[in-house]
Image (tube, rainbow, N blue to C red; front, top):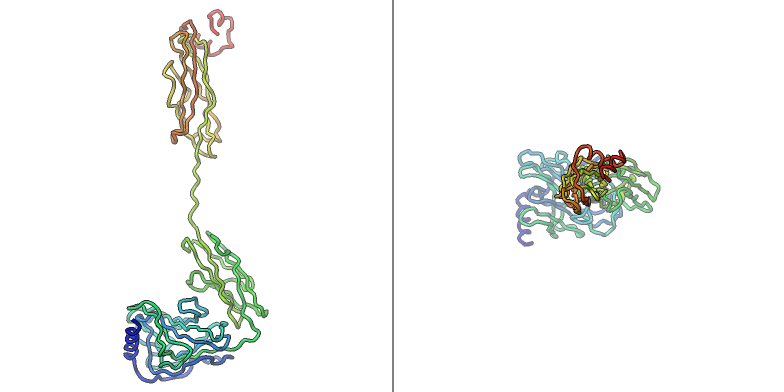
Amino acid sequence: MNEILRKVMVFTIMGFFIGAGIVSGISSNVTFDDEIDQKQESWFQEIPLYYFYGKMAQSFQPSLNTLTRIQLPMSRYSYYGTPGGPLTVSIKSSLDGSSLTSKLIPLASLPEFPSVEWIDIDFVDINVKPHDTYYMVFEYDSEYGDDCPVLYIDYDLYPRGSLWIYYSYYYYGWLEYDYVDFAFRTYGRHEFGNLPPSVSITNPSNGETVDGSITLNGTTFDPNGDAIKWVMLNIDSTGWLDADGTSSWTYELDTTTLEDGRHTLTAICYDGRLQSPAKSIEFYVDNTEDPIPEKNPDLECDGSLSWSDIKPGLTVTNSFIVKNIGDEDSELNWEITEKPDWGTWTFSQEEGNELTPESGEITIQVSVIAPDEKEQDFSGHITIINKENASDFEIIDVSLSTSKTKTTNTPFLTFLQNHPHLFPIIRKILGLK
């Protein structure tokens, strides 16, 4: 597969062959206090960075401990005059790792092919470890027919690195070409005694779950006592955000703009000379609304109904209590569903709705006309249920015994029966107890 792609690469490069490039000078008048570190300054061929190649890179090994900028011979190739997006140039310690520093290059700033200029790309200074491998990564998102940036290559003249191409067609992934290199220069300097600053993230803590609007915050520290110039944040590699403050920093974040789930927050700071190592934490967003807790009623009844030595046909009365002892503000809908099949029963209320604990208990008046049978014992029960929950019910036990004498159930006798403390002489004459 590598040999096939190697031939595809060579064929594509030769298709753009024009011979030696035309150098028009460095496109910067800024004075720098750095020096060239690594370089490969010749080229024989241009190579466009367009949709066929997703990304390209050049590996290198610095000898200075601070990388300040790079220079690249560059052009802009115009197919149909359709503007494309900017070119992103990043420095990474691994091809698919996070950017240590990066810069956007507008295509309009590049000379139109076949003209070539050394373009100065001045990054924020970063600490690097001498003799470790780093990568200049060139990324350009375009469609077929858009303008595209053009870089320049030569055969393997740089012994400490290689050219890499990320293919988005035919083969997906990075492929190393160790027989060619991009033309480039890296600049840097030795920093003696000047250490990079550091940044910390206080809120949220690593692994914390947050919701709504929160204040991201943290602190910075510079071991040399230099003033921190800025702090920047990045959430899920979606772009850098300016934090408020330097030694102590904050950022107001509306988490409802993020999807629920895991996210990565990265912070960096800069002291005017060196950028801090990136500090990252993971946090979780959960903006699902808490379910409204159910307010469950609970039926309770107090009381029992018992009458003894009642003359047959006599009407007797009593009462029991219905109440809701459930959750606060719950509403109970209740009803009487069963009663004894002897006697004639009457209730002051056989059902009720929306009884809350706060409204208190209600008293149910009960009257029953005793059966005509003499000297009989009757028993049974009254069942009251929660209409919304049949398993929530109460039983009121009922018993009644009749005497030998049948009573003619007149209104006056019923009145005397229902008021046992009135007219004791008349009650004695009539044989009422």
